[in-house]
Length: 386
Image (cartoon, rainbow, N blue to C red; front, top):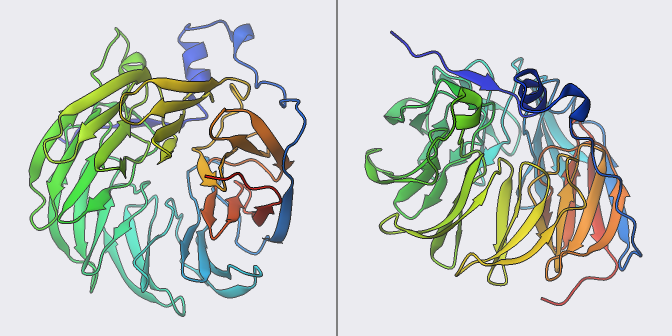
């Protein structure tokens, strides 16, 4: 019998907890007010575009943009895929796939790959937008595809990882992780390193897979389920794992952030945290936003907390991005926030629209995509050194 996996949308979770009696309905956390401070830098909008479709749709999927060379690629839940010129926001091409797209596009410089809610994977020629092939993977795809020279890695919401041929989409191998029956409606993307793929699952396990055959090299539990209720035992790895200075970093919902040895999977250190958004690393520091919308800076080598910013609590912030000495996060209240990465102090903000995917930065320009399908490019006037 096929196991039925139920997923919970991240924006429905607070209401579910309320209904279960974890806190009174009248005490549902309200977003913190916009922080007040004296700005130390100023943002400048270079261009904006509304030609990319509806955005992530009513399910608040984490559909973000992808950059390759001089082009930014954006998918819409309503089926549009659009190529936009980085320097001026002009549209290069746009196609309608006719499906409910659900992932950030993956790219290898020649082929764009997107997944949809119907369990289909679509490969597109990056130069002209022509569809190369479609392949069914028998599971909703929420994680961004990882596109390599000869294959693409797809992770489905039911805990399966498939390697598909980049030439025609046929299956090369698959790996199945036993998943819990209740999971968050999200997924982390596989991280490819040399001949291996690092994959996080809703079970709380981080697995290193052999890229050639899909076999597990090692498995490490980042967190273990705890609690009497299924909802309190959720420990999904929905934040993309990262590699920094030859060490892996992974985080779970209602669990931990951990530093791991790449070769063996052994844990160097771990700290209690609940995160489903993501992290970045720089300057011997790992920066992460948690489920309460707090921001943490951890010493990458020891796990010691360098600073902890609480003034965005419950604003549903995105994962952080690094830009010219600042961390940048978006929130569901519609703001981008620039934060000093050394101190955690606020430097600037601007209203752009509600966001649930991290902004991305290239060549000192930040690109932010809202849930409503508005894309904007920004620079800042006073970058920090280092």
